Image (cartoon, rainbow, N blue to C red; front, top):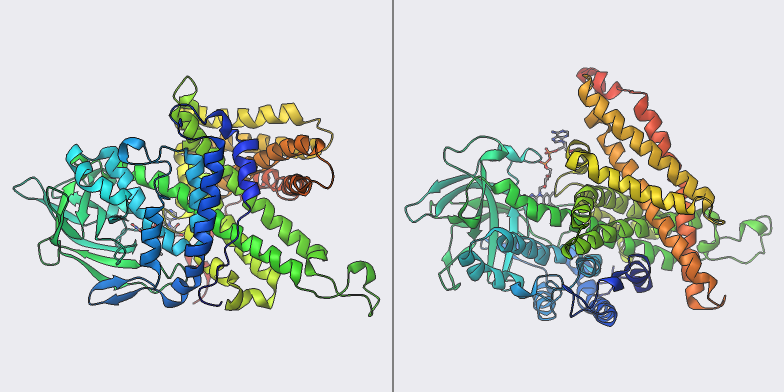
Length: 609
Ligand SMILES: Cc1cc2nc3c(=O)[nH]c(=O)nc-3n(C[C@H](O)[C@H](O)[C@H](O)COP(=O)(O)OP(=O)(O)OC[C@H]3O[C@@H](n4cnc5c(N)ncnc54)[C@H](O)[C@@H]3O)c2cc1C
């Protein structure tokens, strides 16, 4: 792809529909805690951010991919243009939309921040990880840091002077975070000497900010094994004095820079802490052995954002494929297939291309709806009130779905986008293959998607005595009850009802397996269960949007530009309900059969080599 060209596309009408017509954000605006925000401000922020990403981040996407990062004299040098983009991003305040005003933010709704993240990540996923990690690390310090730590680090991290990372992974401790060996040895002044190696650290070093504040999971000497004995430390790349001024190096060295499949503009580093015995860290909040609980604060936000990265990249892949399909001409219409003189048509007219396009549209818009649903639950929880607990519960329940289903669908959509372009999709000129390479990591980092599935089946389904799951099923049930006889969507709603019932029965089955000696069937089925629940949620939200779209469309003249938009919403919902949702009941049947060949095949039976 030509360097410096923006390929990013977003459908802002779709964002407005989700926020204002479907999720009724207007009900929350203009009152605490969103007093300063009205519908106009939200629309303006989206339009301005779209302009920013198309002008600044989008043109750097291929540059970052092709140039990558370099390690020069032990320091990471980011691709050309990244430094200027970082400065502009912070000048324009795109990372503080939903940050509390008391912490220097703009106090806006999370659901808007999620849209802003989609715009940033869709235009340039690799770049956006740098401010994303800085923001996540700052949130941990805001939530758990001492007043003194907040004073020294927070403002600098929220406004781009300092960056941040999350350092969990070690060579022997990947999914098994509790196997971490990085040590923290108490020093006389209450701080700790940190020593150990972390691997695969995103944004682990760079030249965008004055300092990089690493949040490092380490074990205080003598602490318990496993995750319980882990503590979280603030370990800056360069020391920070009492007044927040940056001093000399803190013995954090970049051991290597990984060469990888995608997100090449982001520096994935091996970091060596304390090679010379001079790396000093301080406990977050001054409290030991709370590392996992504190890190989870960052990970929950990060998991939502990884799902959003997936939605962002797959959305632009879809919109680019759509654009190509409108322009590329091949073959006559199927209705004239015998006539060699029939005019060539745009590939958009061929049924299989239309199928691919609608499949992508439904998956992108459906997973976006799911992420925004989670975010609006978060915003409603912030209002407090009697149903705050319900909203918090839904945030917990939906987080693994957004992360895992959003990222799995992203790779799938990007692959379909390549297929839609044919050979042009496979070569670099069109930028689609980069989207596909970039998207693969989303299902791996921030806990692989199997780890998300285990979080769902092992923790979230039973959380609050199963109340969160029951509330979710009740929400879907109410929609089914209200719309099962809908003249247009009735048949689709009835398929949704089948999916809901299958999901409920499967949840009971999982509990049975846990109690009757068939425990290995639970992890064997976990990914499938996550998929079933995600598809049920997406099918419900798409149909909910379609019912709204249908009502709105009835009041419009046929040639109104929104008429086609609403027709698209209806088609995507029906497509998903009739082509994807029947799979939920089918998957439940497969699970019920307790087919366990992956468990019983002898290890040597996988291959003879
Ligand atoms: C580009 C990139 C950026 C990253 N950024 C960061 C970062 O910023 N900070 C950070 O700390 N880490 C980061 N990581 C690390 C990432 O989070 C890990 O790669 C991921 O958690 C998986 O760990 P692993 O690679 O060791 O795989 P493993 O844990 O070895 O897993 C390999 C396979 O086994 C499966 N598996 C593992 N354990 C189990 C189990 N108990 N039950 C069932 N299946 C299991 C996994 O699902 C996976 O399919 C990054 C990785 C990459 C590649």
